Length: 77
Image (tube, rainbow, N blue to C red; front, side, top):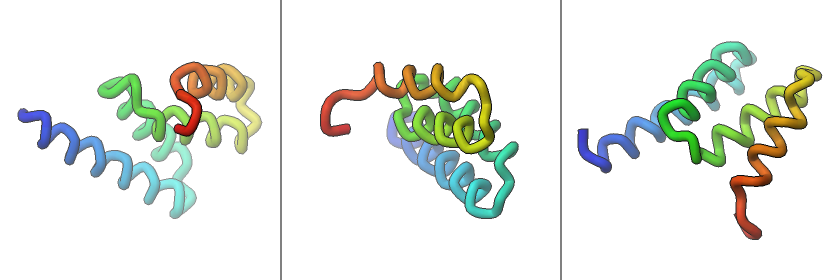
């Protein structure tokens, strides 16, 4: 798979995860974001989305997820 194809696949996975969120399928959205992070550990979108999901569901891991996101970002991200 070329780098360009990998980027297209990543965008498709992010779109799918967002659609799951919009339709209220949060468990599927969470799973998809986790799969994205497994394949692309630096995905800020996936990190932030997982942190938001955790926070909205009162998950005790929310703070840890936000910290991971914060440590991966640079000012202006």
